[in-house]
Image 1 (cartoon, each protein chain N blue to C red):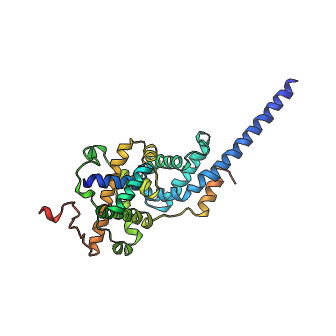
Image 2: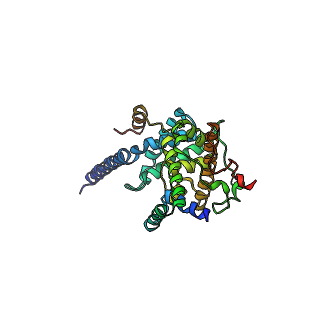
Image 3: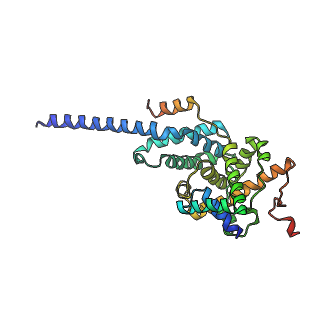
Length: 218
Length: 73
């Protein structure tokens, strides 16, 4: 076969391949990535505290996902992959801003563990009547008041339903750390919600106070 | 004892138990009133968090902007 014809055929093959790749990547983007946009927006909103920054973060996430789409394996866990990109984008860009949220210092929490005898790990008196009257804002405010590393695990586990293993991969920490952060985060959240309930005049039937002690101990 | 119960219930709601252990937790919640109460309270808390937290959705402009930037239809 003449050389010019070989080169031409090679070019046609290459264009066909590029076209097939684009078709495949567009399909992945539309069918596997975009369906998670609302979940990503919620996560971004609770990390960045406002909708405008959340939109920027989501947009950046999708642009990065598209740029590195060749690294994604079709039909695998697109949601976890996107959340990891978003979390990294947030750390890289948005934490640098002046409104940088409080970061958990690992050393501050080295001594806690879920096996610890933490009285605060009990159950709050979460009667439906309290929370029927509670606006969503109080839950949102309570979650957003948590230090970033604790807020992140609550959002990923309790809001998005990721498994410990998925969360571990998204935030790059061992599963044991995920579990202990979740334990601590839930206690903090319960404490905040309890205080809110008390501010409405409700008291815990069991006698638990917000510091985790009980009236029986006094 | 209380911590172990709490741990099992937490693992149940975190979907971190195998099917047999999940079934076991559900059975215990049915049979043991104290366990059942704790189970219900944890369930309530999870539902409250899920249902009350603000979930702003992505509007069509954001979706269009993203598609436009990555050049897909």
